[in-house]
Image (spheres, rainbow, N blue to C red):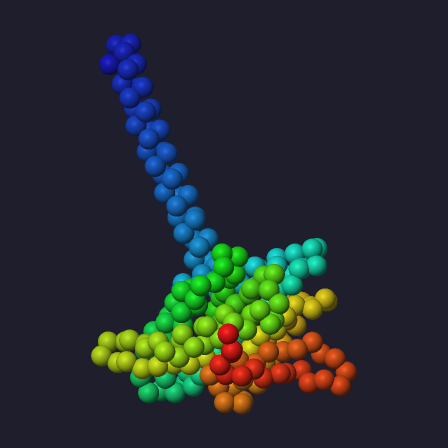
Length: 219
């Protein structure tokens, strides 16, 4: 015993204390990591929230400036979403949002593509090193896949569609301007029939800002 000059018990105690301390540090590190994930994730859909999405987009814009890269931005808005909530209830509306988020996740995008929920029924997707013409194919794939996907909520089954606007980074763009053009193109899609894709073209004298794409993109 320690009183008799035997310090072995103290060594065991220090070992137990060290193990407990290490476990506490590990738990704190795991908690910190979970909090970091929560701070950048939309709680409902599990995708990037608006703040983290904006941080990622800002970093991509900086790369465009540094390396003269291009990128395309898509804005998505679920069609008649208020009608979904009013008809089936807000819980069913939440499931519709999750269904769309899963559609994005499973749409065959590349590892460096990223997306997020900007709020309400609006989502955005960024395709780095992709021009606006090349962005049309994945946009149509997402639109057509969602159109054929059923939303399941308890005994309820219903379908949803999405309107899509696409813009391409231009020199001098900020997050607000490149997202703003995609948002305007998306608004044009909603105003001209919904469940379709519109793209924003570079603003030039004597040309229209928008050019509507055909509903079914030819392969």
